[in-house]
Image (cartoon, rainbow, N blue to C red; front, side, top):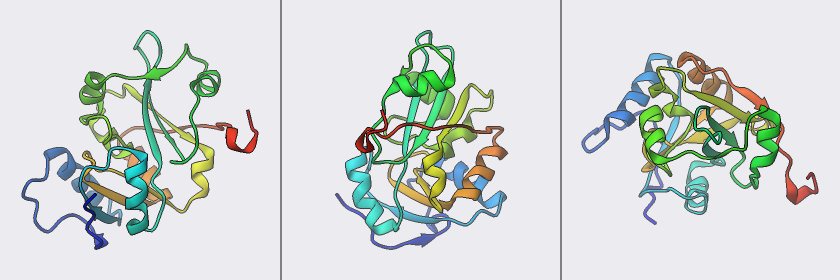
Length: 188
């Protein structure tokens, strides 16, 4: 895995080869005067690869899961600690919806403008019709920093928690907070 060990502040100086979605994320961050640190790397579309990026970035990368109900009429973007196991039954119960599953690639592309392995709250910018509900595990709010991909998994951004929430609000997405148990601590 090739990771540029340089921590960059802000958008790339050379935008050659960057996709429009990525540039749109940088544009919104700049409009909101939100500072961020960026690490560039090869595609990092699994949590195992993201752990290597974390070492350069200096903060943990959260897990972002794009989910839907059984009827595929309700969509959720769940943000939670990257190393925490996920069980749908606990989230389904807290959201009061039918059994959740992973949403398909077509819905991800249509609503968030991205592909599996690249999704983060930064792509809520593309959900102009408010089809996706942002859901955040409260445990994630204990961290000062939240990291995610800007539309594609070849860069990772680190933002202050408050700035990410301000970014999400600017897209019209107010989060719903949940408390997901951690089976590693016997919380099931």
